[in-house]
Length: 346
Image (cartoon, helix red, strand yellow):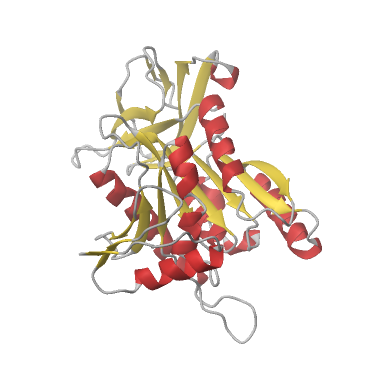
């Protein structure tokens, strides 16, 4: 395979972007070089959907320990995966994480400004983002509780949709200058986990888009999202450094805990097996199944008397500082048989 190297220092970001764009289309190219970091950028294809993505692995990477993964969704033209990943490579070296940037498919537009196929594109990009995470995990030691999602401008649409629909995958979400309205995320309110931290970076001085972003923040709050707004100036670009600080703060302060439910025996549809998934390793559990029964084992098996919808919750001891102290409670609405789970509100 051909490896492309630069032979002189590139000072212009435009020149670097052009170089990487050319490298990306050279047949047989297996690596791209960003002169600002010691490791190459790898173009990859995940086999589940055939989606392409770029991956940067820091020079300090050691498979013996689990590493954070940030997935960054680029915007449409003139942004591109090769341009978006360069916003992250130096930070990946500095803070120690892997960065993956998938190729995003954007919706078609009609004669007006309204998208014509947005629901299909949202679902397709959700599958592509999740498949990217799965493919990176297959080849690297990725920390299960430190997978994070970022979106830039129009890419924020797909980051919010995929991230908030899959809170058991993505610990936190940050978006910058999201180019969308709340009604462009159909059905999102049905699965909101109000413990999942979301940060929206926006330019308050931009009269039109700033107002739109404020409306988006209010809409996300009305559907139960835990949103933190952050105002930025016009000079700020993708604001990736601030996103990393938000991710670090979220991991440090907000416990990540989810209820999982399974029906392994089809002949017993009312027999549900429960367990937790998260960043904690609790020694004590107290489960409430919503029908009057309780359990104190880690992975209980509960047989519901009849089909229906129940409010299930688990309480475990906290640890650390801030909101991690004391007891931690998580709840979910479960429909049996199925089972189907939706995050609840304590």
